[in-house]
Amino acid sequence: MARPEIDRHEALDISTEIAAKYFRALGDPTRLRIVEALMEGPLSVTELTHYLRIAQSNVSNHIACLRWCGLVGSERRGKWTYYVVRDPKVRKIVGLVRTLVSAHAERIAACTRVDG
Image (cartoon, rainbow, N blue to C red; front, side, top):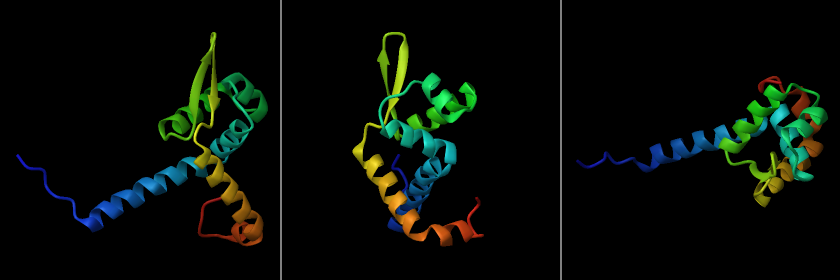
């Protein structure tokens, strides 16, 4: 049985939805702080918990999301798991966002159309 064809417009809509979901993964302040912390080097959940001053279960939940979306990876070292930003493109995305934010911070902060 042949699969129904997806037209180009529908494929673009699917691609756009996935891209938006990827940005939502980075759009959570805690997840963004985790990614930025991991850009400095590998950290365990315990270290992230102390750094962020939030519950371990909360950190673990955010890490799970970031891993699922491919934003961070993990490495085992003995009995500990350390989380890392493996893809240099993630670093570029965060760096570009920081540059854009610094250039437009007042307008972004004042925007009422995007949840804050």
